[in-house]
Image (cartoon, rainbow, N blue to C red):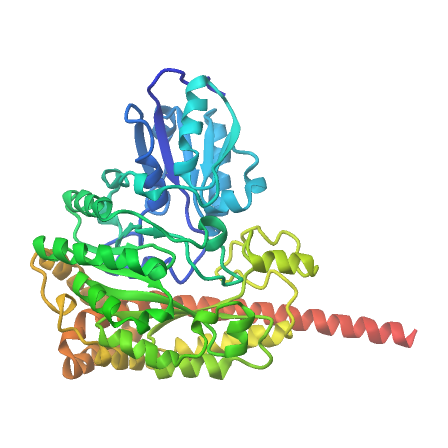
Length: 536
């Protein structure tokens, strides 16, 4: 392996690993409709890049949009990579490839922090939040260290000292939207969630000035369009976000509303009219809500009590009235499911008019309360923390409810909610409910050129290449124009998502069918062996 530089300069090649397989969020087909290659850039890596010494040179290659070349490796003194569980296989491949070029590799991020043993082949493992450990790593590199494990203190990082991400490293025209972060952590205790294990239950927030600098930094690159605030729960610290949002409103107004925002939050967002009004005026157009289940006993069992004792469909209606579109997540396979969940979940999706619901199978993530409980109960499968490299990771444990019934429920829910007619009908109902009398319903002249270019591409590509969906697409858009013409843009975006979701749902259904068939075959084989043994 090459000897490490001990002077003050270093060429760092950051490689963002590919996300494995298809997923709800890997909507490459929808991106291509609008002329992009991938949904979002690697915010974690460009944030770490901003923490490195200014004398170091940094190059970024995102394997979701491009390939790493031999020249990239030849230029680099040090390779850095990191990511989440769905990127695990490619991270390991990057480590192997790096060693093939006789270069040292440092790995970090959520999956390495949760399952460091999987990344034992890396020369350096940088675990935890980077701000708390990066100086120690840099010092070790400058001393000439060739390997090591560096672990930062949990939940103690002061994010007010986090520098702006290196947006200048990105080829932003290849992405459908950009990422930004205001806070880390969530005050709730959902058993299946790894966020509170990685970032704690006391949300830590950046300052208003920090956020305005980041916005200006991104603005100065020439980017205009969507920004995803990737906070685990934007409203985890309501006081802080209500301090930030008025400043964001002012910044947006001054700059002609160059950005639209989406984020993640808990359903209790609907209880706060002031928050919804601030978000609307700041240009928020979408929010992801983790609903998980409509049933009280199931929610209590998973420790998601913030969703109990409320009319979720009514809560979503209030968010629509603030002009904010809702995407919602559901999970099948919890221990407290005592019966089929097909009707409860699909009925809520229809009643609430959620066009884009994500419905997955429960997966015990590494380093969560759920994983620890299942391990204590002896129910975890071998290699439970290995990414299955599948579009349907889930049920990596022995279930309480019959596994075949859970899989059958999952399949039937997917069949119903992603039926194209049902999907389009929900788009119309949701678009009709949207109250777009603020910035989200106004034309932004700073975004006009880029918006028109994207929408023209979507219309052209759907019309040219999707004959089986084309008729529904136009009928839905015309219905929205008649009922709520201001909602034409969010309706168009939701319809564009179906180009991915329609295909992806068929893949999920096929994979679920294969699992069901394998279970039935195993059961039949076991029954035959039992009968044969009895006969003997």
